[in-house]
Image (cartoon, rainbow, N blue to C red; front, side, top):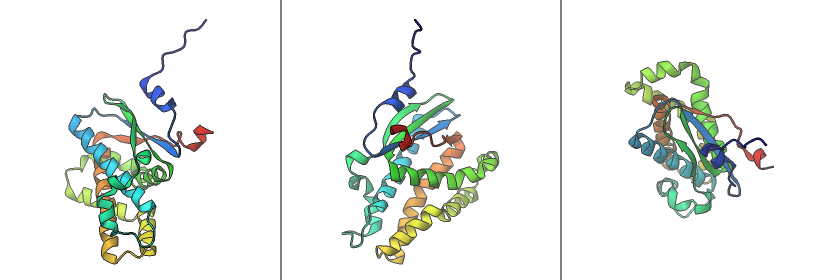
Length: 202
């Protein structure tokens, strides 16, 4: 009788039951992480996820200005829908995965691809230029032109946000994403293709 191969911690994490409506997003990383780097990265990922979630729940006549809602986004995300770490491997080659609400993860993945996938051939040159402030500013400019940001601007207009609120809200999305992309280039983080979507739960 064949002995069953011992499952890795990654396999166990990804095979465990998911919360209703939640999906996985997975990354690989070729570089080792320091505790400080990982803390910074996870913090920015969580900020972005929470702000996208809050924007997706916007309705006309919200009881506080949108920028204020985004600044308080963690407290506005129900615990059942908060971003959760499912797997982390520190040592290179490593990786990690998160579980979050399906619609938000879809937006998160799309925004990531808009910025990084189309520029994969420039990865090495971008990494070598990270100390140049112009490179970081270029990332921010590129983020401002993504489909997701355009869609959020349209949404903000529909719910009656002022031009000043729209500008502040867009900045509140672009700032954490810029820091995430900067770390992605430094740590050689890659988004794994969509293989953990809702179809896995069928």
